[in-house]
Image (cartoon, rainbow, N blue to C red; front, side, top):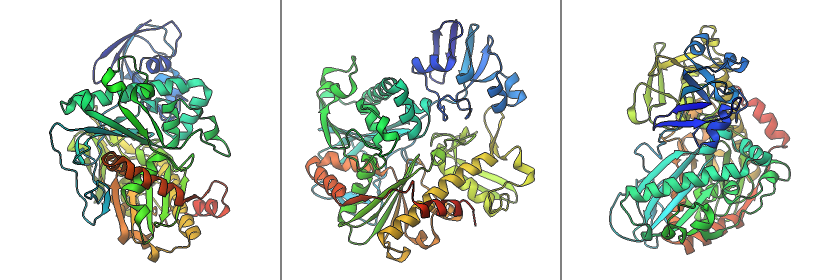
Amino acid sequence: MHITVITREKENYLSAEKGASLYSLLLSEGIGLAAVCGGKGRCGKCGVRLLSGRLDITAADRAVFSEEELENGCRLACRASLNDDITIELIYSGEEILADPDGMPVNNGINADSDGMPEDNEKTAVPEIVFGKAGYGIAIDIGTTTLALALVDINQGNVLCCRTSENPQRAYGTDVISRIDAAAKGTGSELKKLISSKLYTEIIGLINDNKSEYSEIKRIAIAGNTAMLHILRGYDTSALGSYPFTPVNINHEELLLGTLLSEEELPDDLKRIPVTILPGISAFVGADIVSGLFSLCFQEREKPCLFLDLGTNGEMAVGTESKLLVTSVAAGPAFEGGNIKWGTGSIKGAISKVSIRDGKPGIETVGGLLPPIGICGTGVIETTAELLGNGIIDETGLLSDLFFDSGYPLSKNASGEPIVFTQDDIREVQLAKSAVRAGLEILLERYGAGYNDIDRLYISGGFGHSLDTSKAAEIGMIPDGLMGKCEAKGNTSLSGLIFFLRDPKKGRTAFERIKKISKELYLSSDEKFNRLFLEYMSFE
C-alpha cells in the first residue's frame, strides 16, 4: 500500500503491507501523533482526515466522531487498517510550545549573584538576550508533554535563545504511567530513539539559531522526571510502575553527548560535549523538581515555602533550608491539555484565557493567533472557573441541560468546527484539582504548618502563559488561605539548569543539599488523602 501523509511541514510518502496498522506505521516513521490514550482507541487525538482512498469506519470512529466528521473522512489512526492506497492529513500535529508568554524562560524571581548562583529577589525578570562569542552551555528540560532547551552564555549567565516543542513520545500516551507501561511491554528502545532523535534535532537547531559553532558548546545539563530520564538512558522502567517503585539510578550522572544520544550523524565536536544529568529524589519526585527547588533557593529558605509543579503529575514540596517534605499526586494530564476533547499544549492558537459575560464567551489565545486550534492548561482552568461562576455548572460539576450533550461552545476553529468544553472535560479537571488540593492539605499537615506559617506558594509548570492563580482558587485547587502568597513561576526546572550551567560545582553542592534534607511522603495508600480527594471533587 502507498500512503501519503500531509503534515504542516511537508508531504510524507510511505509504504506498508496490506492490513498493516496506520498508527504503527506513522510511529515507525517518526510522524508525531497526539495519542493521549497510547493508541487504545479512546481519546480521539490520533485522528486523521482521509483525502483519497478508503479507510473503513470502525466502532471506535463512531464513538469519537460525528456523522458529519465521518463523512468528511475523519478516522482514528490507531484503529485504521491499510487496505488501499490513501492520502491523509493529520488532524492534530505538533506545534511550537511557548516557554512563557514571550517565548523565553522567565527568571522566576531569582537573579544570579556574582558567583552565578541564584539569589532571592522580589522582582521577576526575563533574562536579557545577548549575542557574542563565548563558552556556551545548553539547558534541557525533558517533560512528559514538552521539551524546553535554552542556549546559555556560561560566562555571563545570559540566555541567548530557546527552543520548545512537544515530546514525541506522546504517541504512547500523555501520562508517565502510560510511558512506563509502554516501555515495559517492549517499546523502551523505540521511546529512547524518539527522544534521542528529537534532542539531536533541537540541539542542532538551537546552535544554528544563534549562528554558533559546535566547538563553542562547553557543557549540557539535563533534568526531567525520573521516568523520562530512565527512558533517555535506556534503563529498565518496569520497577517504576509497581511497588516499591525502585528507580535504577537517580544519582548525578556525567557522560558525553555521543554516548547519550548514539546518533550516527552527530558531529564529532558535539559527541565530545560533557553532559550532566541532574539527580532526583525518588521514582516520582525527579530531577526536574530538584532543579526547580534549587532555582527558588529552597536550600537557603529560613521561612517555610510551598512548591507546586503542575504537570501530568502534581509534585509538591514544603520546607526550609533544614527540612523539606516532598510528595507527588497523580493529577493526570488535564493541566497540560491531555484527556480534554479539544485539549492541546501551550502552543500558538491554543485558548489560554476565557471570560463569560452575559452568557457569551470571550477568549484569548497563545500568541494571539485566531481562529483557535484548541485549549491549553490555563484555558482549561479558566473555562472551568468561568462556567462555575456563571452557574453553567453546579457545585457537583454537572453541566446545565443546554450543554450537557454537546458541551459548552467557546469558539470555532479554522474549519468551522465548534471548540467545546464537555462534561467529560469537567470531570477530568475535578480529578486533577482534587488530587492537587488533597495533596497540599496532607503535605502541610504532616509537615506541621498552617496557611499562616507559609511565606510563599510557588506554582511551576509549562503552561506557556502564566496561570491566573485566582481562577485556580475559584475551582478549589488552591486554598483561599494561600491566595495572597501565590506566585506562578513557569518552567523552574529550566531556570535551575540555567543557573547550574554558570557554576556546576556550586550547583551540585546545592542539589546534594536538597536531596539530603528531603523526605518523601507517600500518599497512594494514605486513608486521609483518599478521603480528602473525594471531598474536594466538589466545587463547593
